[in-house]
Image 1: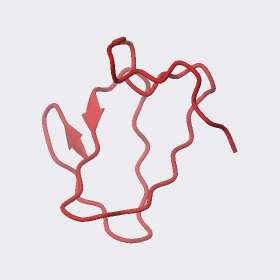
Image 2: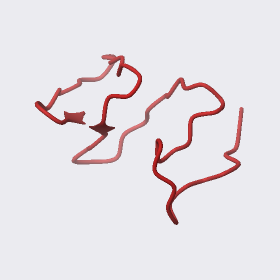
Image 3: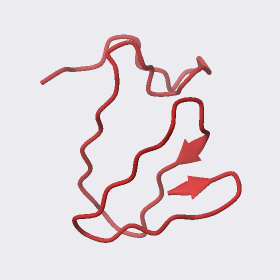
Length: 60
């Protein structure tokens, strides 16, 4: 996980909690599976709306 001031390397089974308002960028060298827990009002692009923003994401 790339943060503004550091990179946190996660291994299989690890998890990380990103505090609200913290800029972050998930990066992987190869294909991975992730599970995200976010409030329903969180956009996939955070507070920046662009052509990558998904207004109505799929829910499980």
